[in-house]
Image (cartoon, rainbow, N blue to C red; front, side, top):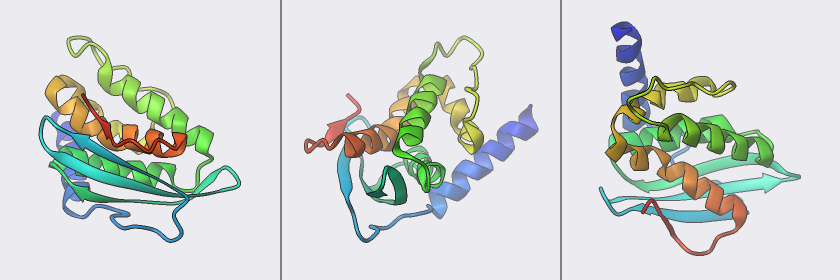
Length: 151
């Protein structure tokens, strides 16, 4: 199990150091801002949605390693997906991280590479860092004009 945990940590560090889709795509059809007041993470998620599909996605901002890695992994997971699937991934990801940390985490079916973030569940204070990009993605899809917070 420790080898698997080390692999997960390496993936998270890689996405933190070299985030994928750290840019503003063009064109942008949806966007939202997010802020984690607890640790100062701030980001904007940008989407190009056409015919109900996330054609392109990017993010910009600053945050801790968990926040940045989660945003990077999120962009890879939702790009090319129907909006409904992106929303389902948001729900599965949130479910994976917000259960009782004293219980063994159930990994939702279809979560794919996002499973690397499952260990965050053991650190409740970091769950908000990991879910910030996802809540911001959801706000962008919903067309929310108010910046979201994880509070």
